[in-house]
Each structure stands twice: as C-alpha cells, then as structure tokens.
Image (cartoon, rainbow over all chains, first blue to last red; front, side):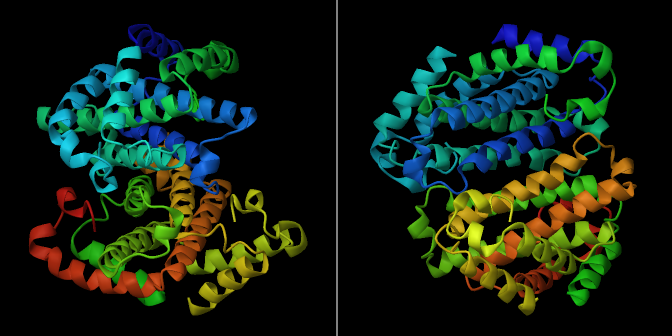
Length: 112
Length: 112
Length: 112
Length: 112
C-alpha cells in the first residue's frame, strides 16, 4: 500500500497536477469513478452480476483500479492510509454489528 | 491488504450477509459511500477542503474507510485485489499520460 | 415548472445562498441526493423495489423531491429548463433507438 | 410535465423496456447520469463553472436532460410526479430554514 501511495503522489507531482487535486475535486472524481462501476451493473440482475464474462470483468477491474487510485490520492492529501482506516473501522463494526443481532439481516448492512 | 480482504470476508460470512453482497448491490453501496465523502465537501471552497478541522477530518476518514471496505468487498467477490489492480493501472497511466504532454493540464486528468 | 424554478430561485436569494450555488457545488449536491435514493434500494431485490411499503415510499418521494430541486436549481443557474431539455432529448432518443432494433434489449438502454 | 411523463412511459413500453426498469435499476441509472454532470465540473474552479463555453454548456444540458428523464421514469414507476413532489418539499423547506437563521450560512444548505 505504501508503495502505491508514493507511486501516485510522484505521478501527480511530475505532471504538476497537485494544483487540481484539492480534496474537493478528488472527492468528485472518486464518486464519478464509483458511478462508472455502477454503470456496468445497472441493467444486470444480481445473479448476472455474479457471473460476468471475462471482457466485462476486465472492464470492471479497470474501474475498481480507478476508484482505488482516487481514493488513495484523496486519502494521501488528507494524511490518511485507506487500508489502515478500513482496519480501524472494521474493529468498530465488530462491536456495532454483533453476530447474533445482525445475522441474515439486510437492514443491518446499510452502512457496514 | 490480504489481511483486510480476509477480515471483511469473514465478517460478512459470520453474519450471513453473502446473500445480500452481489456485485450489483455492492457497487450501489460503494457509490453511496463515495457520495457521503462528497457531501462533506460540497459547500466548501477548494482552499477550505485543504484545511479541514480535526472533527471534520475524522468524519471524512470514517467515510474513506467505508469506501475502502466496500471496494475491497466488491473486488473480493470478483476475485480482484484492488491495490494490485491500481498498481497495474498506474503502469498504463505512465504510458497514457507522458509527463511532457500532461504537465499542468487539467484536461488530461479526467480519468487518471 | 416555471413556477418551481422561480420558487427555488427566490428561496435561495432570500437566504443569500447564491454565493454557495455555483454549478460545480450544485452538481455535487445533486449527485449526493441521487445517492440517497440509491441507498433506499441497495439491499432490495428488484421485485422488492417494485413493492415499497408506504413509509419507505414516502421517504423515497422526499429524496426524489430533493433531486428535482437541485436539478432545477442547477439548470436555472445555467439558463436551462430541465423539462424542456428532457423533451428535446427524447426526440433524439426516438431516432437513436428505433423500436425494431431496441426492443427488449438491455444493452440498448444504457444511456436512454 | 404530464406530457413528458407519458412520453417516456410510451417510449419504454414500445421497446419492451419495462422489464429492466425496476425502481432499483432506475435509481442506479439516475445516479450514473448525475455523475456524468459532476464529471464536467470536477476539475473546474467554481468561477469557471459559472462561465461554461457554449460547447460545454450543450454537453451539460444533455446530461441534465438524462437525469430529468430517469428521474421522471423512476418517479412514474412509483406513482409520483417529481415537480409536484418538489413543490411540496419546498413548502417544508420554508419552515425548516427560516430566512433569519439560514441567511448566508453554508451549513444550512446541506439538504435543501
């Protein structure tokens, strides 16, 4: 992860893109990339979404990469490691959603 | 990263959430969490977004964690490691946006 | 529609909100409200989404209203009537998706 | 508005698209179109977003039309008129944000 953070940081610096990469703008770009993932799934049934053909899967993988890149970049601008932040949040989730109560309930997975 | 992937996988299995976690549904949840980041920045200027107070920063960090969790979960359901995918994409980006051409140009950073 | 446009315009002016309502910011707010609609549907099956209970329906209606309000406000800042724009686009769609070719095909409804 | 609602309904029926147009799917498509508006603004300053050139303005107009079309279609599937819903919500907003308190405050315009 550390390697990816530095890699993206250097990439942007070399191209003089720091001026465009305010957290506000990066949040916008991140949400646009997330929507590009959604676009691949909008007319599929849930069953179909579990069985993508190799071409579609490669396209979705590229969009997942884009979300990861913008998420990493945004987090870096704010001094955050996204993987570390996710680990900390999962520890809170363990308490917030005890297995007994949350088991099999869609109502409980609205915000992880 | 490998640890986070397994951690989230186990978390969902224990709660019997696999049934809700189709790639279609996870893509939706991911985009909703991305929007929750955007919500924090929508009325701020770019300058303000570079200077969040500690409370706001902690809130944004929690949203970044949520995006990371859903992105990891979605990727795992499709057999993808998001950090690895991002690294591969960055190698393509090096070719797609040569420093000479892309330097200082916002038009060039529309899809990383 | 004309009445709604003026109503929202006056509402914002009275509260001195024009300073925050740049098209950039309004586009962000619009996408956040759209995500709040998505949030209601993310764990439902398609069949369930066709049969909302009255409480859920009222909540979705309020989110639809919010999207309509921000869309109208954004369009107004750009000198556009969204209903008129939609009518013009539908005329293009008639040509773009001839009935014979588009019938029953999900692949054809990716961008209306 | 009534005319647009019927127009879109007939358009979809003729093409046998009702089968794809569950509220769940339409909510996804709506959010994707909203993101396509955001994409036009993500690297612009707020000042630039107030001064679009004619080509860019035409592109944004087409995206606004798409959001309006999917919003109308989604609302129709749920038995809602979006303009009417927006008018009702604006009446609530008048009470929720009294001019005296909300004047000039960005904190107050987070959900209209």
